[in-house]
Amino acid sequence: MPDPLFMDRVISIVLFAAAVLAFGGAVLLLLNGFIEYLQSGRWQAASLLQVGYDSHVIRARWFLGNDWNWWIHDVLALVPAYLALLAAAPCCWWLSGRFGER
Image 1 (cartoon, helix red, strand yellow):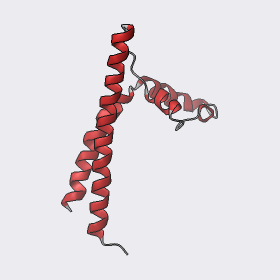
Image 2: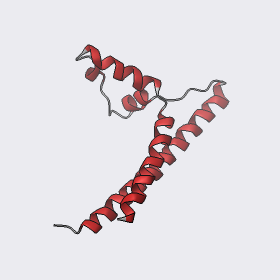
Image 3: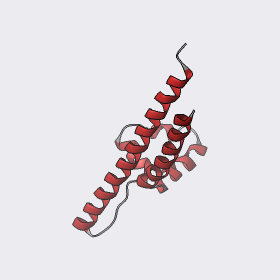
């Protein structure tokens, strides 16, 4: 059985890394949107649905099974990916601190 303090430290490090990666990913997505804006003149933010499809995390057939799945599809299409990452980064950072205190 591993030491509980060791597991808390590992979880804290993983959550800290997730916070840094989420913030870095949000900055990269914003930078990509700004560069596209400079080139085309319109700001086009990638949604969570688009990022999920592009990274092959979400499959289209998941939404075809039931009618109630379409509201999840619509919500994912409305939420910009950089906002989700900017919301996840402080949460992971805070949780990292909480596990690091123990």
